[in-house]
Length: 302
Ligand code: PGA
Image (cartoon, rainbow, N blue to C red; front, side, top):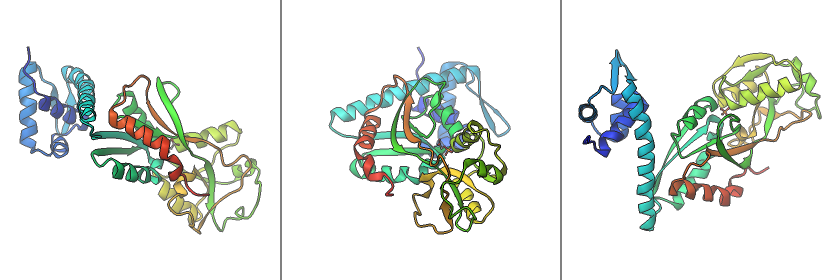
């Protein structure tokens, strides 16, 4: 029988996830020697090396990989137990882990703000990453809920649409097409585009739209952020297809305009996603219920 403490498992999970002793120490609010000691005690009990350090990089040994999977599941179950206990005591408290795609930064904070105000005992870890990285986290079951525009087809998931996510064509306000109506899509083929990085859901949708219409996509520049793309469009470098959510924060921005192109906006939705059958923690279920009942408040005004 191994004598292992919950704290040791939490420490190991943090080091394995962050691949860093110092970042794990920071996250757990302890010193780095404390982290090293917990890992050393754990390795002694397991009787095998769990981590290997080559230069500055940390790798998991085979035993480490197995323990990582086991303890991630176990900590998840334990976290739910703690939340159930809190719930039985009538408290809504605990940690809510959400991973959301980059573009959600235009509305997620405005949803989370009122949620936190209503449930001050719930603390939120929001990971904002692009779609590819989010799918990695989803397949490892690292978070309670995932928010994205294009749910994956190959994974066994449950997804629920909660808000519109129209895809629009953006141009500089001074662009010759700005005043035109019902611009044929084929005319876009003459234009050059600013696109998001590979792995982004926006990029994926955009490529699909051009492919489905048999129109070649001329890429002028690839930029890793919606904001950088908006600035480049406003500067006249090209056009872009972006989620209308990216305009939420500045509805009156005057140097950009939405073009009236045939077939646009392409109507899509924002989804909240979780692995099928995942038992939701009390806080995750509370958040989902909040999202369903309050979503009208967060919709951008036309
Ligand atoms: P992105 O995702 O922010 O990674 O482009 C947006 C989406 O999934 O629609």
